[in-house]
Length: 104
Image (cartoon, rainbow, N blue to C red; front, side, top):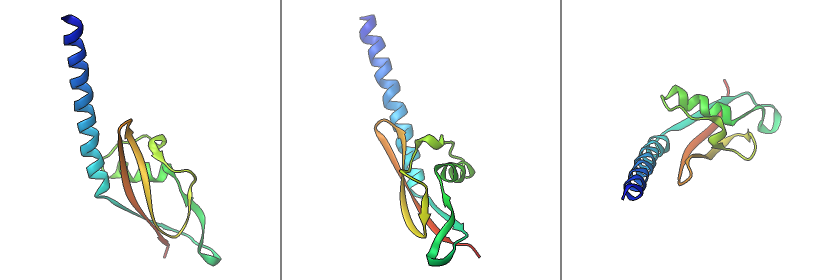
């Protein structure tokens, strides 16, 4: 009986955690990150937009996320709109819209 009770409490905790991450994912999905960057000829960025930049943007919006949870295969080096996935929880993935524009 003790094991059953412990197991149910653990499952309830996991479900609550997942629900919290799902509501956070909803908040993130509503955000749009505009990143002005310097560009050279042929519209290539001098720098890039990294997972750290995205984590900083979210921190500014009151959402603390480790930059390692931002799933970028490589830093973004092109203008335009990009969708970036953020793994909040093993079962919860959030997507943020990122718009890279010319600076100035």
